[in-house]
Length: 331
Image (cartoon, rainbow, N blue to C red; front, top):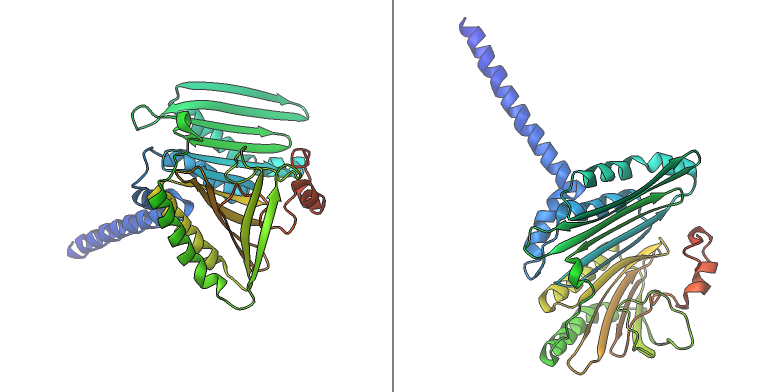
């Protein structure tokens, strides 16, 4: 009897240990999948005036993990927008990837919404489904927007937090503008002091060229003049270190920040702000697949989307990249 009781106690202890282990493993997996990072980001974003619904923004990260092609993240301390587009290579590719969008549609069905619009076509040889909805945020007075669209050729997703003020950007006082410039000079200095760094004075004439989707898009910019640096033999960690500094400046001074892919080949990030005199200041970083890190700064206008390319004209670059040619990308 004594041995039996001891065995029962041991069995119970093992089950408790097993349960704790299982919880620990699940927690670790959730963290790796992005659910845990939400809490870490929440602590970092203490200067935000809006509430980000991590359940919705994690949908973007899940899609990006599985459909990593065209993406764009824009933000200030007052709003954030996540965009993603993926073009299926074939009907077989669509069917193989359909499970995740279906799962997200199911999640959106369970979401409490203010307005919800749905469209769907399921016929032989044709598939289309789209959800467009607005949700009440946990923060009083804030409204969020979510859209998921899946067709035969493409999947698109957008999440806007604090949708009513999306696009709003506040000017930066001259003393703070000078602080930012000082911090950016200190950030760039160790990189541009390295050997074999190439420094270029670049000019983008918006009246003569089609640069397409400029970062910090600004219709008043006629000509942008900037200094661009290319630093060889850099790593992903070095790129991420620069991006972290950009993020810190974005949060501290409430400036605009954007991160996006370039031709599905590499990523770039930029920050932009106007000072009290109306002058637009922009800084950017990009890491190309060959390990070349690009830095740019301008105090006279917006940056083209392709500022890290020697030729920043959109159409010229698309022609050189067969893998990027889709009807929408060639427009």
